[in-house]
Length: 216
Image 1 (tube, one colour):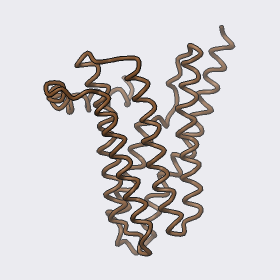
Image 2: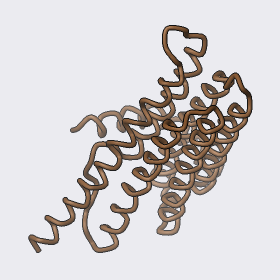
Image 3: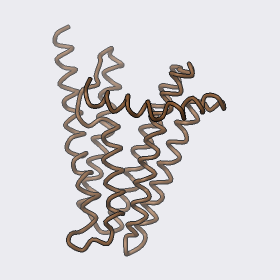
Image 4: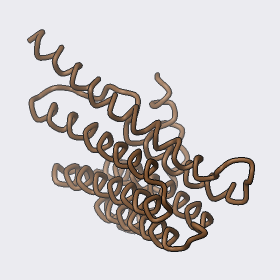
């Protein structure tokens, strides 16, 4: 069992009581998925709102990161509710995938706009590259699966991207009063990691598909 599977099983054990409660009161997977998107939109609005102020309002950035992390739990719970509650459907899987993309892109746009408003041009460019990588990781997998290929390889998948983005924003807010270095680096550095590794993952997946097709 790799680290992702181990963490997934651990989180499932924690959220299972909540999942069963949701099923009992009739909450559907699609409702949970929609709630996750709404939370990410709220986070993006917080980032943009914080960027309007000259001070940067890093506390709002921290709260935005917390909301992104909380919304990530909904990303796990919708699939869990669908499986445990026997509510899985083809449209539900499609709906989940589409709204996940919207959630991630909206969040990264909020951060990108925040950095632009605060005068961090390079930081905003890095965020845009991270946005491209995030989109391409998902696209390569979707396109591969459309061709009948299994394509789940790579380091920087959605859970890792969400956690890195959220923690970067949270700790940026926590260390808002730091004077030994620019606290904004705590937000930008994780985004740089995503920018590099997400795009690398997209090419790894492309190479993986090439090998699979070559061996057919």
